Figure (cartoon, rainbow, N blue to C red):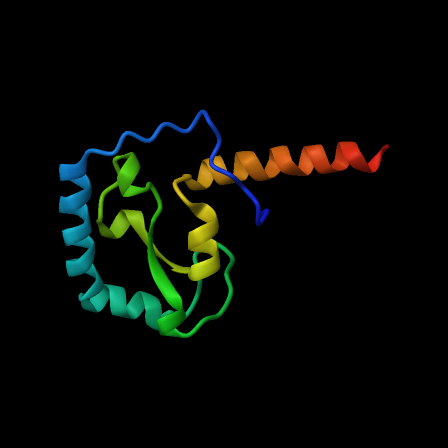
Length: 112
């Protein structure tokens, strides 16, 4: 994935402060669970597949909390810090779309 993906203007973020507060608390509880500890002990980033130490992995919400996502096992993955920072408020589908658009622009410039 491209390192310079910006959140496009068509991504709408209208976070409900009460939802964000509730989900952050749930995330704190989930982080202390045996399930989460097993995830980070595997040492694999869900996005790049790289190998990392448990302390180098963060909890990422696949559907961001600010966009209505939940702090639940089906919506959180272990992610390296660079991938988590790069993902920002995007869903994986949006990341793929933007990466393809960026690749298309790059190939257009190669022909010049």
